Length: 242
Image (cartoon, rainbow, N blue to C red; front, side):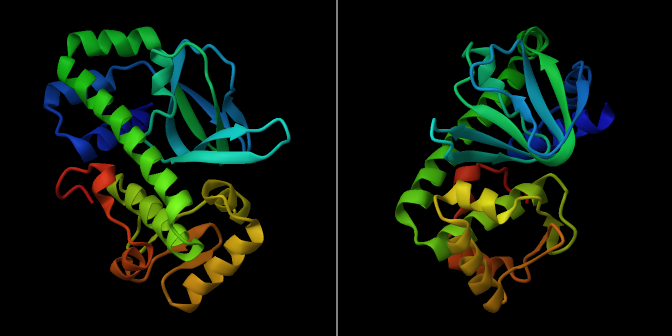
C-alpha cells in the first residue's frame, strides 16, 4: 500500500519535517486498504472503532445528520488525512465519515498507531499537530458560516480545498480534482443548493473559477484569495509547503 504511506508522509511533511528514520517508521504502518463507493458511510456515528481511517484516494466528509434528515458537513478530507484519528481517545463516534465519490481508504489499528508513537515521540507530536490543525479548521469553518456572506464564504472554501490539494501534489497547474457536488457545498456552508449555484455563477463570471467535469480550475489564486478574504494561517503549513 505504498500510495497510502506516501500520501500520509507528504501530509505530515506539509506541516513538519520528518527524518529518514521517521518516514521509514510511517512506511511500516500496516494498512488495510478498502475501496469505497460514493455516499458510503466509512465510519458511522455510534461506532466504537478499533482502527483509524486514512484517506488514500478520493474525498471524505465529516458530517452530522439531524433526526429530520438535515445534513451539516463539518469538514472535507483530502488524501493523506486521517479522518477519525480522535477515535483513538474518544471511544464512541459522535459523527459519521462519508465518501464523496468513489475512492480508497486504508485502516490502521489503533494499537499500531500508539506503538508508533511510543517508539517515535516526535511522530506522536506530528500526529498531535494534525489533530490541532483539524480543530483550527473547524474554528475557521464556524467563522466562514457565521460571519461571511455567500460569495466570500464560497471563495474561501474553494481556496482551502485547492491549497490542501496543492500541498499533497494533487494539482496540475491551476487545476485539481473536485468531486463535491453543489449539494455538498450547500451542506458545507449552510446555504441552499440554489444559492450555491448562483454564487458559483458569480465567481465564474468574475473569472475566478471554472468548474467542469469534476475539475476545479483557479485561473488566479491570489484573486480568488482576495475575494474570499482567505488567510491560510489556520492551516499551519510549513513555509514553502504550498
